[in-house]
Image (cartoon, rainbow, N blue to C red; front, side, top):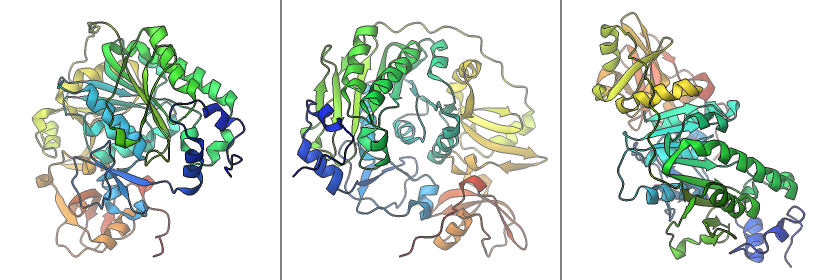
Length: 460
């Protein structure tokens, strides 16, 4: 006997006509199948992270046999991998198809980016010539987004905290925009049973209206010929295929079909009116949670972007610039600037974009924060420690064993037998975790207070 009572009223009935939906298989997956745990490796930080079965649509994605305590894995804190639900990794497959046979530099916006899973996924596929603008609408969610992008370690990222309508001033600025839209959340019922209490047909319709507003606000920022990737963690037709119909009708966008292998278990759909392609993920059919994703292209030739006067270079002390440059590998590839007393670096080719974005948006992070100069010394920033560009020849390096690394990540005292003195990069298996200052009789731990491990170690 199929137990339908575990779901909100009218939920299963609303899905009865959806392509690929099999009620018995769906209920069984929700009730009896443990949600899989999956991670995605950071291609910029090769490590010994344990992996298992590969995620079919993501070369860097892997399932784990069981869920470990990621909090107590130093390689997690070093940014060697990201814990991400496997279905969401399909966004990287879409991006790969868009960029096939096209290596021109791109500017891409992840509009609703926190906590950072899809942003780090996108960032993994980008070159240093490409720019990622990672935006989070809700201010309180911005810090975790910055932290996760800091761990990933690249400099071609700008984090903003803006409403979608603020981007309408950036006419034709982006080549690709990802809108992982706020939704009714039914695709996460298995992982978050509390989401069931919030689901209703009224909420689905409210989400549909919100999604239309967000997409209408962001549309002007997409260049002609550019691509929109749209996704939700909802199964509801009004939030998915109906949105595709609306985009094609309202903005004359063209659908893009994304190749998928039959053995992936992904259900390919077409919208009712415009026959726009979409891709549905059902637990029980795929080894992952619920997801809907689609790709559309903006009609027309590439528009001429509006021209702006860029800011001139800051008047900086040459001696200080040279001092700061010594901490970065290939410093000629970077534009160095200051925000208050903090020294920053971003890939040279993104200076003009940074100037443009600063004029219209509220920026929370740009490139890599290097640190502050105090006399002849640099007080290094945590971002520098995690950056893949840090010049290790310019700093001391102290390798920690596992127990020492956990003490360090707790921001507790770490006993180290060394004659070295001064700022030191603290590493585990060669991967930086952060900074400490080595003094004659003690070690000052400078791991950020807000990131320290607070909970007790798991019992074996």
